[in-house]
Length: 187
Image 1 (cartoon, rainbow, N blue to C red):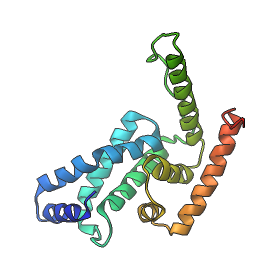
Image 2 (cartoon, rainbow, N blue to C red):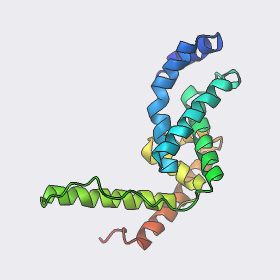
Image 3 (cartoon, rainbow, N blue to C red):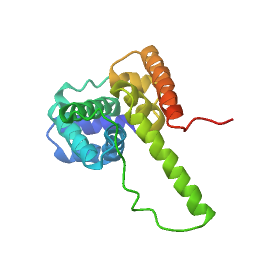
């Protein structure tokens, strides 16, 4: 994302140009939603959290520190809104997943491979939901959003060293959860 363009859009928004903020929303709507979805594992909740994040960002735009990256600031708000929604709903339990009704019947090897891949992905996502929220967030930001340790640290307001430590712990816990589910490596 172009930081200079973001800075200009933030400045224009602060000067009263609502269309400029709309451009920021358009630019970051999908990544903010994806972060929320990976944390919450519910589409409607992710939409709510993303919408809340943009509302909160608009309300607090005056507090944005221009020395930071806008997307880091916005992602931090999105992560916090997602965590707050989890707390409000008391949803630290494991997500139960879908019904499987959307998988068409077919006997082909390609179909069976796709079902296997979807099953493994669902096991991974279910395992992810068994992690503590702080562990889940670092995995989502690193592996699903592809952010650097520095960017994750900026978003979460923690040092890069803490990000690495938290990520190591989260990966270890996730590996153990997946092994218990029978999803570990069989090399």
